Image (cartoon, rainbow, N blue to C red):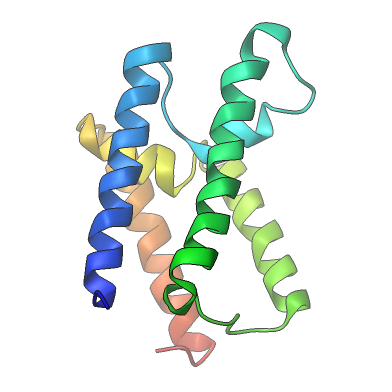
Length: 136
């Protein structure tokens, strides 16, 4: 059974590959919040690749749950806490004009100063929040 760092390495490689392929084939940045946020209402010429991208996210979770369920684990908090956290992340992504994938993966790879500031901000905020919530 592979150790957890191998799962993380494989997942990171696949994220990088997906971001690269999306950029090379469509000239788009793989910012998940932007892809999902622009999904509704649909724009006809963008609908296909957005559906494929979001479908790939869902399918990869299903495949991971089937092939390596121990790599996923149980939720650390209740469904209500996760729902509120998800809404706050969505709000923050909107305020920051991007999310961890857009700024952290794609923006840093393009040496964007704006993305560096965004990543430093959300990593610091996340660490402080985890500490305050007793998760660290």
